[in-house]
View 1 (cartoon, rainbow, N blue to C red):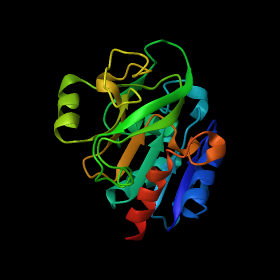
View 2 (tube, rainbow, N blue to C red):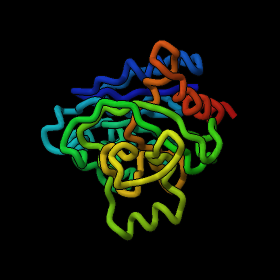
View 3 (tube, rainbow, N blue to C red):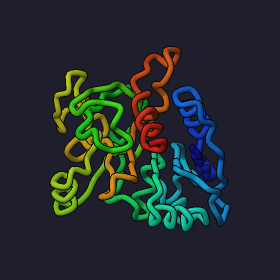
View 4 (cartoon, helix red, strand yellow):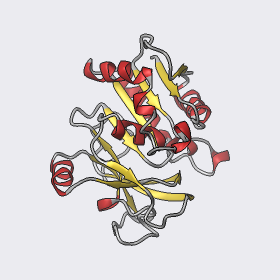
Length: 233
């Protein structure tokens, strides 16, 4: 199993992602600099969190035009698996690999807190480690995590089952207007989506920060276990 983690200027979560893959599935990903013009032979590409290019334009907008993104676009077209977390999710939307956009948090404040997510479907590589309806704890660390899309796009996302993670209460209650449950104000409390193939996933919270008791929780482990099951079957 070969996994590559792409690093842009300002990325700061690549080491967390390496640790998660190593501890959960025993695989050490390779690090790929954003100016590379080719990808090695990979099963999966990961875009981690951070502040690519200092978020000087829009979050992820400049990174979406880095040289490596042409190769990632081609990788996607060939059926490759791609996961973007936090800034990585922003980059995927800016690159057109996922629909929608990430806007400033409704509070207009940076969020650094735990939250709870509900599994809306468990037949994707990223959710198969859970049961549908399961709720798990994870961490947020973002200033622009407010997921938005227009009415037509939202209808398509919901009807085609592309929403895979949703912000909830600890008991799984959804209330998009409750900032305790939906901390950044995302439309329909959407925390993570997949493309129509199910191979490309973007999510705002950080499951890689919840894979060891020393981190306060192991709730994020099923995501990585599901990826391993998918890539090794």
